[in-house]
Length: 295
Image 1 (cartoon, rainbow, N blue to C red):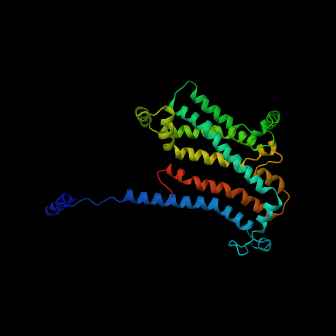
Image 2: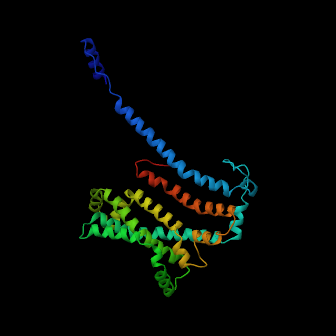
Image 3: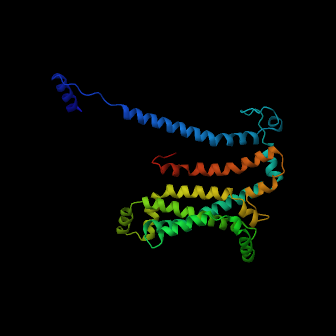
């Protein structure tokens, strides 16, 4: 620093002038960051305002909901609609079924899909590109085509009308995406670190568990979020395979189809909140994917 100052003073003493600093790249970078922030705010508002309106309508009293025009800011809070929804219908047990199906789906998808993604990332085999294409084609297959064979299969296996049957179907739907996401994340994990763990005495599974999995945690979290949301929002499998143990979307679809508007808003709020809470719980791992952390 002192040498630089002395050099500048020497040049000024000799009558030399430095060229002006070009601040155009700095201005361009600030403008780009400002546009990115504005775009993030606009997308958040686009996605958050409908959720806010559903919450306001679900937590408003009957009198406040019947007013015209409706107020954007709630002034008559009431939990009676949500309470009646839980006490008068089977929403409570169906929410538990949805949580169990979602957690089972996440666990089974990671147990089966993460090793498959690791194998695709670490080993080169014949037909690898065709295998990835087949995975995408399996994901594109509509479930309604398989509804009758699946119902017959689980009836013969004695698993009809159970949460496990729904979780197995959801796992089959989520496995292609889980494999592709985890494979793309495992590719970014340096192979040298895994080989160093093998040299220090870890086995293949130990190196995978202690080195690869912690570094691939953001991708695994992203896959878990996608899998849970897919299971939480899926309706057809539960509607076809269950009668008394339906998940929340299927239960709301069947019980609130002819209900009044306040109960429909309350059902929408109950359907949205658990998925949002799960994403908020996993967000620290998602943010780590882009080099930041959330506490």
